[in-house]
Amino acid sequence: MTIESIDDPRRGAIAFPEGLPLARPRVADPARVAADVEAILRSGVLTNGPYVRRFEEETSAYLGVRHCVAVSSCTSGLMLVLRAAGLSGDVIVPSFTFAATAHAVQWNGLRPVFADIEPRTLTLSPASVDRAVGMHTSAILATHIYGTPCDVEGLRAVARENGLRLFFDAAHAFGSEHGGTKVGGFGDAEVFSLSPTKVVVAAEGGLIATNDDLLAERCRIGRDYGNPGDYDCVFVGLNARMSELHAATALASLRDLDERLAERNRLAAAYTAQLAGIPGISIPEVSPGDRSTYKDYSMLVDADAFGLDAATAAAFLREEGIEIRRYYAPPVHAMQAYRTAGGAAGPLPVTELAAEQALTLPLWVGMTDAHVARVGESIRRIRP
Image (cartoon, rainbow, N blue to C red):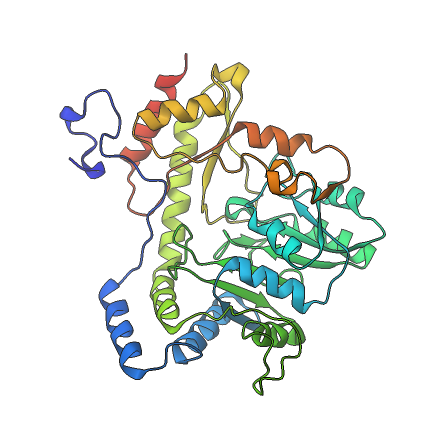
């Protein structure tokens, strides 16, 4: 029996005997990718080739930005934009994010300063950022969490008032929209992830999007060690090139993107309807006029009202065969690596509450309303 046969009466008391995975990568035409891979291998051009250039052109057109620079990962892309921007001192970041956001800051010899998040959206709070600005602050690096766009205007205002650069970790957000405009052209640069759990998949990879000509050029040089072509490196870069094989996979993943985004939003709405009215369960919001990719669908569990805390609820749901993640617990500022490495302008109460309460549920194209209903039933069943 497979997860596609969840209505089989033999399933017993466990909702998903064969397991419901958190995510499943999807590429529209695997046969096309296989043919492209064969062509690439026969050509002998495995990097710095036409597939990467075509991927950059297609993504620039889709996002409506001047430049896209394909790289080996979102983390390397974040490292490169911070290096290419020539920053020093402190960079304000959220703590409710994947560790790579702060890692990119720390690897550049900069200090991450953690600011709090908005309770409604769980994205970086402009007011908290404003309080965190100090004499050594040079930039803000915000995250479009779960694919939900940040308060771009609020962050932009803080950056302008304080003369700061503004960057976005858009790892989850390829296809997200803010006010009808696709995420990608906000701030000085935005960096996307193309790893297997993301909406656009290259197997592994990342993408820098920017309207800044100089920054784009420095990122292109930086992904090849800082070598402009004559082996006289102009700054200390990385080996962060995207291979032709990864670019071929990413191009195929673009082909049905809008249809998949629509389906992810439909499934998210179905989840929200299923969870409505369950005491102690709430859902982070997407602002009116915005679109999330719903790279992750997360709920918040109030232990007092639900009867279980998030960690215990997660354990029970795993027994139901449902793959669960606690995105993001611990928050970055509480990780061993950052207990003494970062700074914070005071306590982070919203971050710490979100980390305590957040649970991420399975969501991927190919799931059905029946899957979503069964997850909802499991959540209701485990409540004392």
